Image (cartoon, rainbow, N blue to C red):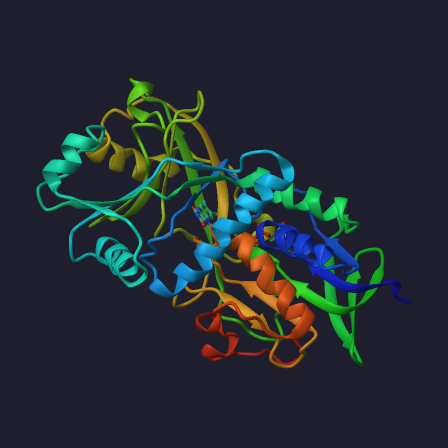
Amino acid sequence: MAHGTYDVIVLGIGGMGSAAAFELARRGRRVLGLEQYSLGHDRGSSHGQTRIIRKAYFEHPNYVPLLRRAYQRWYELEQLQGRRRGTGCGCLNIGTPDGTLVAGVRRAAAEHNLPVENLSAAELRRRFPAFRFGDQTVAVLERDAGFLAVEDCVVGYAEEARNLGDELRPNAPVVSWKMDGTTVIVRTEGQDFAAGRLVVTAGAWAGRMLADLGLPLQVRRKVLLWFGTSDPAQFRRDVFPVYLTEQPEGTYYGFPVLDANGHKVARHDGGQVVTDPGSVDRTVHPEDETDCRNFLHRHLPGVDGPCRYGRVCLYTMTPDEHFVIGVHPEHPQVSIAAGFSGHGFKFASVVGEILADLADRGTTDLPIDMFRITRFQLTARPGAEK
Ligand SMILES: Cc1cc2nc3c(=O)[nH]c(=O)nc-3n(C[C@H](O)[C@H](O)[C@H](O)COP(=O)(O)OP(=O)(O)OC[C@H]3O[C@@H](n4cnc5c(N)ncnc54)[C@H](O)[C@@H]3O)c2cc1C
């Protein structure tokens, strides 16, 4: 017997789910949000202090209109709560002129008329002396970029959702869901719940919660590290932006020094494939440090202190590294947002709006065609448990 009847159940209250729960409540929907851990926890993909936000999107120019909307909606969350969630410090994109990163940033900026500044190798050295790169390396600086306080954003949307009457239940793992006619029945360990719509925002667990679809999602273990610096003044956010750099050995990114833990740095590509996100190794081991330490030694020699802090986080990759957002191909009552491929957080604010549109009317005016579920060969597993 299902308990309570809701307009919408949101499965997973992380980055995307918290924003969706908020937007649905604002539209007057009766919402139940189910989260397996606490709100703002550190076992999924939305933790670790900061997330880069930028608009000149090397991944594809089609993201830019969504980013414009995402920025507006982050500012709106700040207004609602009277607290800053984002910090503008600029983003420096560093690589060779014909590399994916620099060429991609320039292309997105040109197509969407975004202000960016091209820096030669010599200008990069002069303007940002903390970096060491050779003469083949150039940079593109985007000023209208920076970072979001990731946990505060999740908790902020959850708070606003609750203020509007959403019922958000932490420590409520969903075991499965099924259709009963046009009603969705969601089963937790203790209870069943019924709703007219289901929004699946399960992050690294999306493959499991949508096993009937057979989405080609791969979860990867990613490590974030904080290193001490000899001269923190060089890494203050007024002189040191967030950066991304594409190097022959890999793509790395980092942040200004924000506190006593020092410089936060991580590698974007690669990562150990995870079969069970619930039991991933969350300890940071000395061998997790080596790769970033080598990068810093070569390119940011002022970051030479001890590793003071580390977190393990999860990427959920799709084969083309673009998101999966849409309505379930067999059940129009169910909407999905998954496969954010390590670059989704900055979009959470607008994804909340998209998911509310999909739950309300099965479609959205925001441009999400690139994220079609059916672009992949789906390998549905007959009888697979959701
Ligand atoms: C190390 C790292 C660095 C990153 N850097 C950036 C960056 O700089 N900029 C950027 O834009 N993006 C970045 N990303 C990507 C971004 O953080 C993710 O794309 C985004 O957080 C994904 O949000 P989500 O809501 O899909 O997942 P999550 O926030 O993990 O939310 C999913 C939620 O669903 C819950 N859940 C799952 N299954 C169940 C169940 N059965 N029952 C109940 N609850 C369930 C989970 O517990 C979780 O809370 C980074 C990611 C990582 C890991």
